Length: 264
Image (cartoon, rainbow, N blue to C red; front, side, top):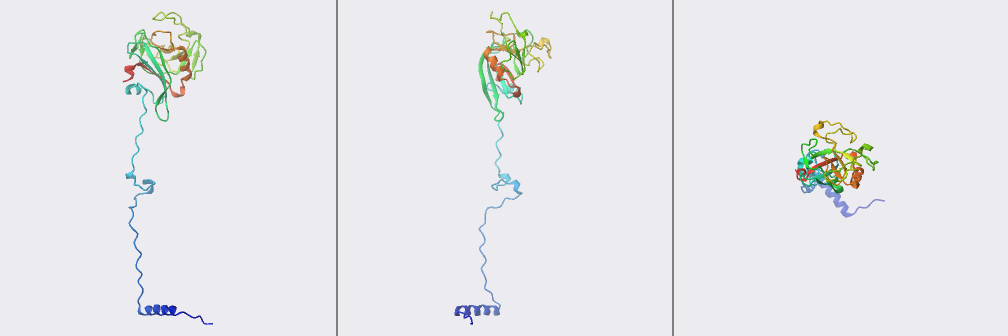
């Protein structure tokens, strides 16, 4: 059965055929161009931020802050503290010729670089005539400076120190101090200050690398209630606490001297 076409279909076919014969074509208007967008960043992908900003447009990160200084310590003194040290006992004298001290133990955070107190403040004594930058034997002054403190000992058993501890009856002492106070028990606990001594030896070791005339045997020991020959002294219970707190992995040091000098 023949398929019947509608009149509209027949007319359309005739019109298309006529146009083909005359060589004409229907012109289709071009598609509209897309609106211009922001310029594309140039350069390789690794030179751009993830958001497409060119490397030249990056905001530089602020520089990392320098590690904070120990409280009360000035830049000259702080510069003498080893970079790897994260534990410091700050011993501040009341004045250059005074013999009363305040001690605070600080630890430095390995991430932020800031120092925080972990023990103290404790009150004790230094040498009878105060402090000196050039200590000599018998001058009755304590040496100022920054010194390692990594060796300990005493007449009494080890109270739980993490640094090497030398228990020895030779730490016994007798007699009286400058104020007539008894000295007995002053060396029950001691921590050697590495002034004119060989690090890593017991506090009783007598070797003096700078010579005997520069003094030696400068310790932190139990306070006997008066000034010392050259040492720093702290109350008995504070010495025991200090011995338990000193951590050899933190490279402990003592920062000692009159407060006005330490602030430089």
